Image (cartoon, rainbow, N blue to C red; front, side, top):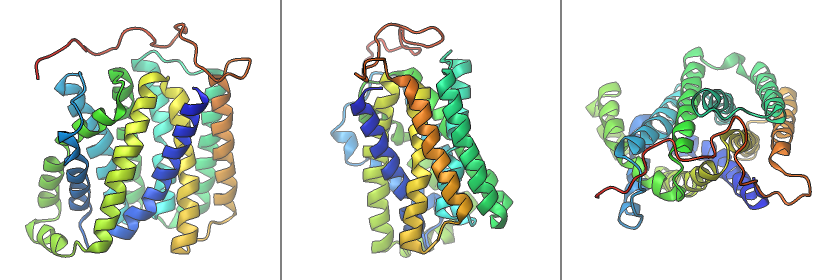
Length: 314
């Protein structure tokens, strides 16, 4: 990864880390799936009239929207509604790093380097340390739902990487078109029409500000950048950066929600940061330029896209 890509990845991690506190702050009184559906309505409109559809099949857009948006955030929002604290939710969701690298190795033949494996293992150790120090009071169902969200995110990352769409914003916007209606239907089934109606009535300025942040910064800006990074870098070089998000989430929860981190959380957070630094050492060439080589590497997919990207009629 180039230095510019590294800075962009760090920015995304910061935006996403603060996102967990914003979700927890804004979801009060609104059913989680309804809250998420309204978020993605704002992601789609009006951006869909300003951003050209990416030149990939609709099945690719549907797959990215299903796994990276409906699956990841659907499970996450329900988990947080079921009692998962924002800082710990950010931490558990980072199991997506392991899922992504394992799935990418099997599906895309992107074999991680030894430094990337070591960095991920160090980051996972940090996750375990924090989980052991904090997770005893978390409902088991909430923890399982959050892990399912991480798995769905990992699948979505690999689909996005395989698509190789140059403009990450276009993939973010157009994949979101398949999200609001299924989420609204799920909300009606899971919570019931009366709860959905009550949630719409309770949607005040606090929920509106939260939705603006999650839709504008987290989805449009964050995933626009993230999908662009996945399009031009191996998955194992990009996803370790997201391990920084729990550090930002826990710090934000400490400052804004008075959720003071204990020793395990502080130590685990340091291991997470160390894991990212170790994993990213392999992405720099000797000489310090930080530019990525254009030569295909053994065990990676640096050739033609794995999806049919021939021009299509719109």
